Image (cartoon, rainbow, N blue to C red; front, side, top):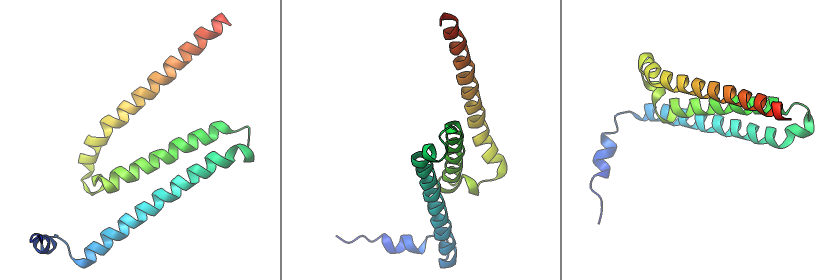
Length: 122
């Protein structure tokens, strides 16, 4: 059975071939950028202790920053949030940012309390 909706769908794509090239170029750029960032993360994880054994905390912060960059590109490109107006992006992203800051605060606060409590018994 042959589908009869393929031709109509391709005619109603909503953009020209030039716009399609721009979209494909953008997707290719984001894919290559995410692959490069992931490769850098893997290389840092594998070789950092051999290069600078006393600075492992820096690789942790580097991982956090690179992961946030990757998450930003994924949300802005593949979830089409980058195409929205600035106000809509703010309304969507600001609660998540505040929630992450709150979770970070709670994690640091509780870890400090547990560390001080355990040091009393040692």
